Length: 114
Image (cartoon, rainbow, N blue to C red; front, side, top):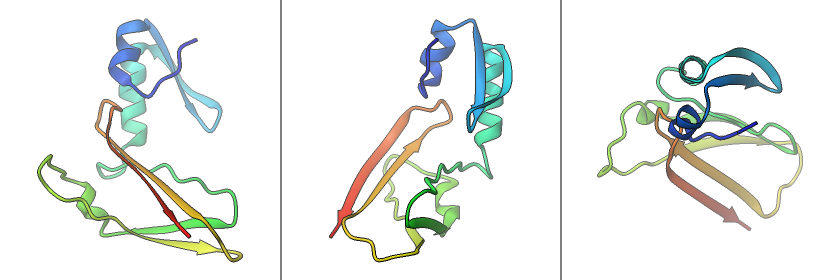
């Protein structure tokens, strides 16, 4: 068993692949076809988002989501987001990763507000 979001590595090391969605297998086949299925399932208008939904904070929306459609290495990326809370939140932590179509992280940032 090999688990990774580095799609090139998965394709080079594995002959078969399985795609999971919240712990349920939704595809099983060759590694190449599994990667294609994974990319298709995770594209939503060109930008896929994974949102952690447990706890007192929930993600409400990404404002200006169109900014994620075309990114270039020399352009600034400004993300404006809205969150809902069910109780006061202290030491808020936001972790954002931008991955290319192969699943390789190209930008990663963590922020903490007190």
